[in-house]
Amino acid sequence: MDQNFSSHNQNLHEPIEVDATFSRKFLGHCRPIAFRTQSGREVQISQIGLIHPKYDGLRTVFAFDITDGASDYRICLDSESLNWFLEFEGDHYE
Image (cartoon, rainbow, N blue to C red; front, side, top):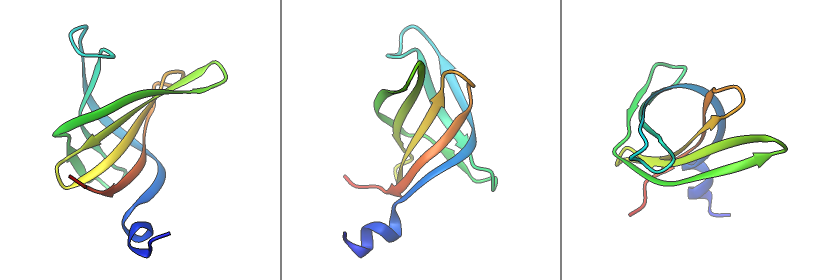
């Protein structure tokens, strides 16, 4: 594995707070617009890429691949607990 990749990309499972809108007009009805980490860092979401469900038995976790223009993230919504967590943070690539 590329040393550069491993030092700038992190797999996490950090609880976060998310500001989101809900609308039938948007695919999946949920659109995260910003999130805050436990350290207080706030990230404004500039673009949403893929939205995909992940299944764990009867539980569904919705993963959102997003960017703030500087870094890429994957944030997840657990449909059972309704908790959000930051799963991945890495360098932004065009």
